Image (tube, rainbow, N blue to C red; front, side):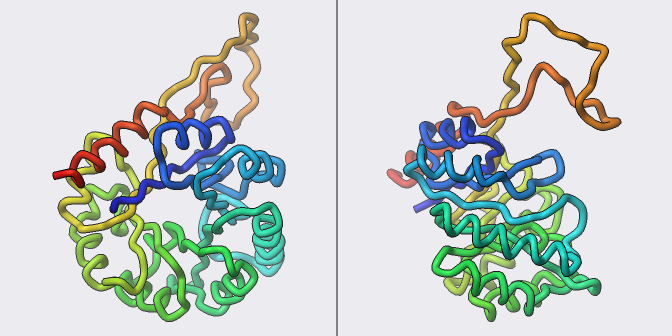
Length: 250
């Protein structure tokens, strides 16, 4: 049976994902940079309000996945925080400077995380050798790996995704994620054989502010809009979940 994971950056979006029928959410902050660790308050309220699976992103900053000793210390504390607050799993990824899976540090964080489940995120997509990287994660006992097939989207990465799925067998779960939408997700699943998918399923939400000072920006030089934002769209999640259910019924 297909499992649908929705990437969210707020409790409101997590609740929309649950209403839409998702199996679990990956709770992050700062999706513009690919997701960073959410606040303890966000994790706590999400756990209190949600019945579905709750995965917590452990990523101290955007950018690459080569972390300093101080950043690793922060990641340790965030893993402990997620466990204390009742998360079902954590999501992280660490590489060496040579572009290989950082097995020693991954093993250390996994030991702290258990009995929570562990997903190695799309740091995998920028490792040097996907097949060797997958074997490293299997040796470590990682539960699943999130990947687009080392491309910007799963559609572009379908050939590698299919190869990785055959390599993985039942030794690790391949979670396909990257550029998936209700329109293309069925094609990717059919072509690759993956059994779990990851998407954000977002649409724009307009601010309720009546007074708007357009002269002031709270963001950086890219100037994101101040009076609208992206949030998980319950209807998009439902379309994906219902589509898979219909396919399973035959």
